[in-house]
Length: 422
Ligand SMILES: C[S@@+](CC[C@H](N)C(=O)[O-])C[C@H]1O[C@@H](n2cnc3c(N)ncnc32)[C@H](O)[C@@H]1O
Image (tube, rainbow, N blue to C red; front, side, top):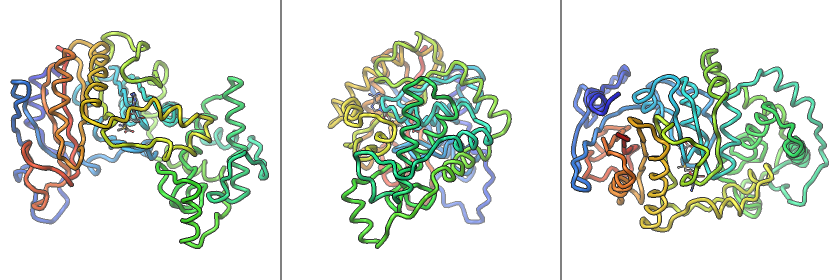
C-alpha cells in the first residue's frame, strides 16, 4: 500500500466483527464504529491520529502457538494488523525487540519471511523452535530416550520449588540439553524440549513443574518461595516433567492448520534469530526489510535477574551478564538516546517504501506521551511519520473520552507510531 492508501484504509476501517452483544452501544465511537481522526502537531508537522477498535482478542482467534508467557508481550493481533495491511506474502518482517517472538511467529504463520532480534538469549530459545513444528510422535520418542536420574542435583538448592524427584528430572534434562548443545548435536526436537521445559519451570497451576508460585515470567527468590510455602502450608508435589512437556507441546500445536505449518517451515529456511543490541545488527542487509513491528523496552526499572534467574540457570546462561546488556533507562533522555540509535539502524535496513510500526505503550500511567519523543527520533533518522494508530479496546462511558490531549490511562489501549521510508 502507498501512504495514501494506508490513510484511506485506516480512515474507512470498520471492525469486521459481528457485534454479538445485546447490550446498547456504550462505546464512545460512533454507532457504526467508524474511525475517529484527530491531528497532533509535532516538530511543526501535522500528524493524523487514527482511533478505532482496529483489533480485539475476539476478532479472529490467535494461534495457540503464541501461548508462551513473556514479560510485556503484545497480543498477536497487533502485529497481524500491520502485517496484513502493509506486506505481501514473501515480504520480510522484522522485530528488533522480539521478546517471545510474537511478530516473527505471526509473520511466519502468514507466509512472510522473518528476522527477530532480542538481547535476551531466552527470546531465541522461545521463538526459533516454533518455526519447525515437530511430529508429536517424534517428540514423545525423543523424550522417552532422555535418561532421568531422580537423585541428580546441582549446587543450587531448589527444594522449595520442586519435589525431590522432579528436581532430579529437571537437573537431568538440563544436563542432557547442555551436552547436546556443547557437542553440536542439538536438533529441533531438543530445542522444542528446551523451549517448553523453560516455560514450564515455575507457575501457579499443576501444569508447571513447581509447587504453586507466581506466574511463569516472574520467578521469585528461594527465600520468598519458602515464605509462600509456609503461608499456604504447601510442600512441592511430584510432577511428571516428561508428561507435562508433552501436554504443553500438544497445546501449543493444537489449532495449527497444515497451511500454517507449511508457512512456518518455509519461513524457517532463511529466518534469522539474532541476540544483539538492536542498534547494531550488521547481519541484516541494507534496505531488505519491508516492515518492522516492535515494542521497545520502556522506562520501568526491570530487574532482569529477579524474573529470569531460574530460566537462565536451566539454560546455562549467566543471568548477570544478560542483565548488564539489557536496556533499562532511568529517564527519557537516556531512553531517547538509545532509541535514536535503534531508528538509525532501522532506517538502514528498511526498504524504500517500507514501514516501521513502533508501539509506544503507556508510560508512567499515561502521563508521558511517548509518541512526542518517538516522532522526532524517527524523523531524524530519515523516516516520514505517516500516522499514530490508537487501538482502543473498550469504548465505555467510564473510559473517559479518547483523544490525544486526554488521558487514556487505565484503558486497554495500544498506541503505535507509523513511519515510512520514502
Ligand atoms: C516490551 S518487550 C517486547 C515484547 C515482544 N513484543 C513480545 O511480544 O514478546 C522488549 C524486549 O526488548 C528486549 N531488549 C531490551 N534492550 C534491548 C536492546 N538494547 N536490544 C535488543 N533488545 C533489547 C528485552 O529483552 C525485551 O524482550
